[in-house]
Length: 302
Ligand code: SAM
Image (cartoon, rainbow, N blue to C red; front, side, top):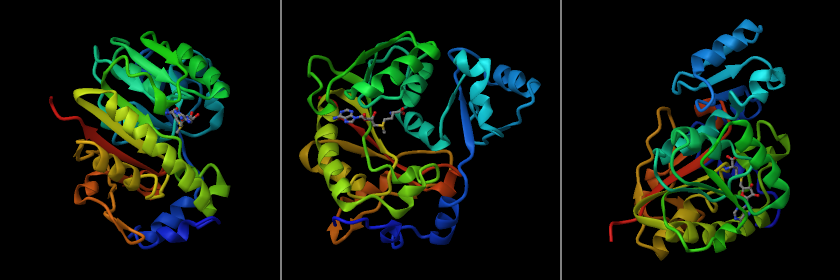
């Protein structure tokens, strides 16, 4: 698997294939997530509508709207951090994580900070939040977004996630892993050819190291959400399966307020544990957004 393998290799696992392909070539709608640390959805909606923007609520989330034009990013409301421009699908891993005020939370791969700032808003800025990003050129955007959105409870660190120090333990961890990003194909058309096999293999080796360290950093009864924005089973179900084979992790059902497909249990002759079907695969036609994968794991009590 060294050349581009193409989306065609997913035909057998995506049952509504024609709808999937049609959605992949449609333009991606622009979505904004209201930053409730700074303003209410009602306030932002009124301010932007009074400036002539048209915002349409997204039925399954009270803080998400489709916006009619990208110039919404040039408003004072955007500069003041009243909202964050984010694909709707990218809000779902934080929903699955369900962060609570006062908890100790790690975002292991945090830049540019869409999910980290969302986590802080769920925490009402209360409780330690570690935003980790090892890639130097991606740290300024993370820090800028933390500042712009008024996040007050985050500390930024720069460890490679797989060697994140074992000095502290966390109630919840988000591992939004570096991945082949096939699910972003509506904004990056080159990805419609699928990722290369060598990229998928390299990333899946890194993801295995990351998920083991993330799991080891949990407190007993802590929750880990593993997410990607790719369709590749090697990076999704394959990574979660690896964790299940190495640790005593419990896989929980991911519950979302929209249609999604279950995690697959066989791929290319490989059998995954039956409970892998508790993970979810989100395709562009499910949410009129990008695609992705989410698993929710729990560490048993001691
Ligand atoms: N969670 C982010 C958000 O919502 O804005 C997006 C994260 S992006 C999918 C994955 C991130 O992992 C990238 O910023 C990348 O630089 C970072 N990364 C790459 N190698 C890493 C490693 N070894 N440990 C931790 N993060 C890494």
